Amino acid sequence: MRAIVVHQFGGPEVLSLEDLPDPSPGAGQVLIDNRAAGVNPVDAYIRAGQYVRLPSLPYTPGWDGAGLVAAVGAGVTRFHPGDRVYFSGTAAGRSTGAYASRVICAEHQVHPLPARLSFAQGAAIGVPYATAHRALFGRAAVKAGEIVLVHGASGAVGLAAVQLARAHGCTVIGTAGSDAGLALITAQGVKHAVRHGTPDTVREIQAITGGRGVDAIIEMLANVNLDTDLGLLTVAGRVVVVGNRGRVEIDARQTMAKESAILGMSLWYLTDEQLSDLQVQMAGRFADGTLTPVVGSELPLAEAASAHAKVFGGGTTGKIVLTAT
Image (cartoon, rainbow, N blue to C red; front, side, top):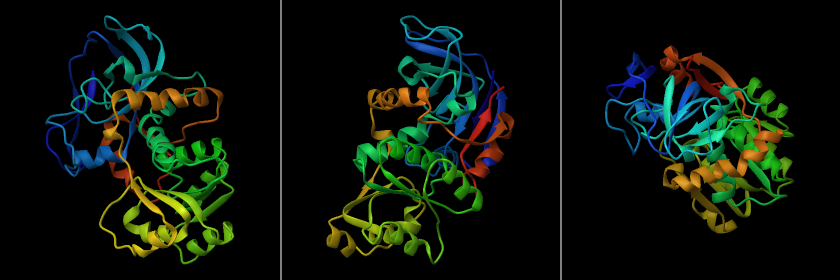
């Protein structure tokens, strides 16, 4: 099989395409003929050695993917060879990840892929939708009828948050930094699309809410937006920090005046059962079309370095996916 292997932490150039022996599934495991792998920002942080949890070297990156079941180990009852599936996580953890043409997963990490979704879309489900679900419902505890502001709504997690919040009956305000991003989130049903990072951004959001403020903010770049976010909240509003790239100074009095909350989140603290349950909760909505992953670009596995360079590039919309075949 072919796989991306990292022998030392560093820039995108350390991502090496290599030929490795085909793996075999053990008891309770599923062997997947992988067709697509999702590229998540955390993959780039880990590759660079800039993450709190680092794998032992060498390792194969990637958490999410989709393909066909090739074989199953003893005790596996939910899947059979030929089934279309997506997965979130691999049996070997981060040492043998999704950037490979064949992947071994524990049975609970594998989920049926609806016929309406492509393999590339399946590879865009795992981390983005689990992150958005956890941020909205596990941390912010949003309720139907509330106003939710999604910063960076044109990215993979942002789009997932938009779809989930709309399906839950929330009013969604989405921000994006480009014309393409604004067009994309508008096409996703966001009635209030605002360009972020301009002198008018705050005024536009305040006007949309009639000065009331928003109930919850899903924040992808806290080091830039957090202090401003606090001023946009209504009483008892919540900011969930999904992404951050540096230190930030805030006026903590803003939290006192509105009894607001700043909440962090990370999927790594959830148990295997909790992670699997997040996907089970969303399964019906992927099948009926309520939730549809948006793939922004597809690159061959050999161009993993280019994919990592694109992750933090300006103007990126939707999910970046590596095609494994």
